[in-house]
Amino acid sequence: MRKEVRMGVGAGARIRIMELAVVFDGAGVLYAPFRIIKNIERGVTKRSRVSGITCTAHLERGAMAILKTRYEETLEKAEPSKKLSDVIREEKIEIKVVYKKKGVSDREVVEAILEDKDVKLKDVHETMSFLRKCDILPVVGVGVIMDLASKKTKYLIAGGINFFPGTQNLLKQLHEMGVAIFLASGDRIEKDEMAPYLPDMPPENIFGMMNPEGKCKLVRKLKEQYKVIMVGDDRNDYLAMREADIAVLSLQEEADRPGKIFEVADIRIKDIGEIKEIIEEIE
Image (cartoon, rainbow, N blue to C red; front, side, top):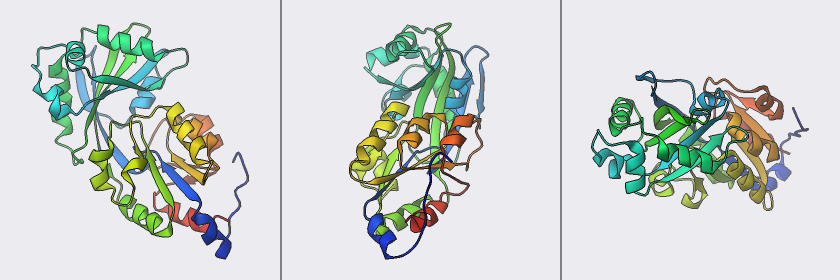
C-alpha cells in the first residue's frame, strides 16, 4: 500500500460521504468487456480475453486508438472492399489515441492509421458480426492496435460491453448515499448512449475514449472539491490511481497487469459491490 488509509464508522463518516467522489474505469470495473480481435497479418479472428491495452503493451512501439463513430451510422454502410483508412477520411471520423508506449506521439499514430492499406471494411464487418452474437449492450466500438515500428495495423478490434451483476445496484446505492459518481473509460462510449443504462449517474459525469492522462486530469480536478476514490483495473488507470486519495484495484477480470498497478493500489477487490463497504468504512 502506498499510503495510509484510515477507516471507521459513525456520524463523521456520513458527513464526509457528501464530499466523496468515486471515479470508475469502465471495462473490467463496471462492466465485462467483449472483444473480437483480428490479427491482420495472420488473418485470424477470435474472441479474446486479453485486453487491447495488454496487446499494445507487448509491442515495443505500440499504440491503441478508437474510432469515434457509431458503427451502424458510418462503417456498416461502407462497401466491404473499401480500405478502412479511406472511409475514415471520407466520413471525417475522429481517431482517439487511448493508449500508447513511451516515445510514441498521437500524430504518429493517426498518420500511420491513415496511411495503412491492409485493413478493409470486410475485416471490420467480420469482427462486428462475431461481436453481435455475444450477450452485449447495443453500445459497440471499433479500434485498432498499431505497431509503429513497422507502421502497420497489428490488430483490429470490435468491442462491446455488459454490466457486471452488481454494477447498477451499487450505483443506485451510492447515488442514494450522496456520493458523486463518474465513469472515466477508454472505451468508445458516449453520454447519450450510456445514460439510459446508468440512470443513477448524471450524463455529464460520463466520459469515454479517455487516455491515461485524461483520467488523471479528471481525478486531479475533482480533488479540488472531493475526496476521490479511483477504481481501476489495468495499466491505463495507473496515473489516475496514483493521483487519487484512495486507489482501488479491481481484479474481476483476468489481465496481465504490471507490478506497479499493485503497488499503487490501497485496496484490492474481486467484486464491484465491495465499493459500498469501503465507503461505509472511510473515516
